[in-house]
Image (cartoon, rainbow, N blue to C red):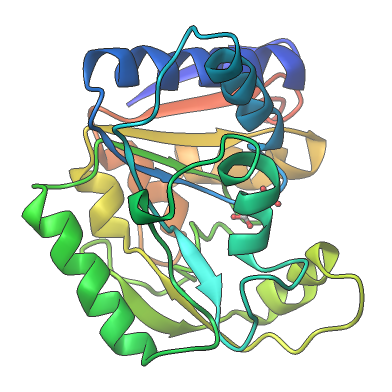
Length: 241
Ligand code: PGA
């Protein structure tokens, strides 16, 4: 695993976008999973600029959902789908047939997980998997205690996630369970990227990178993934020794 630190959120985002764009230029039909949430928003902005300026084509990519809150519909502000639509899929007018996303309100959640597992298996793993890190060390909705081998599954959210997750919603929202890709998917992807910015992530980032890897701290799996990149801004890296 390689750790790279950039001076600020802007340069971190520019570099993350550039790494993703370079991969897609080499593998134009890449199977790509991009996290929603606040961390990658600016990275998406740079990718959108690249595509609009003709420096990058993503027409042949297939996009897979990272996670979704169960009970929250795709158009509700704060759903993972709505965030991805707002920042990436809609600005780029991505063809719906190239998007495979969990739906929080329709369909059988376990069946959706099975289908997405099958898609990823049929493609022999994801090409790119971009994830953030939660304040409790979760990756996507893989909460503490989730096996490092996990595939897509339905899981209960940790109390901290239910509280911190309120930041995405306009009003108090009941969050209880989610559908998520697994930690095994991160380990098996060709280009796994863990991204973090801001002082508030410094403690959990330092723990994830220094403690003995354990499912109690899901993000610590990153130490076990030789091809993984951990990309940080200086604030998020400020507790690293
Ligand atoms: P954030 O979420 O990017 O909004 O900080 C990260 C996470 O909880 O995984």
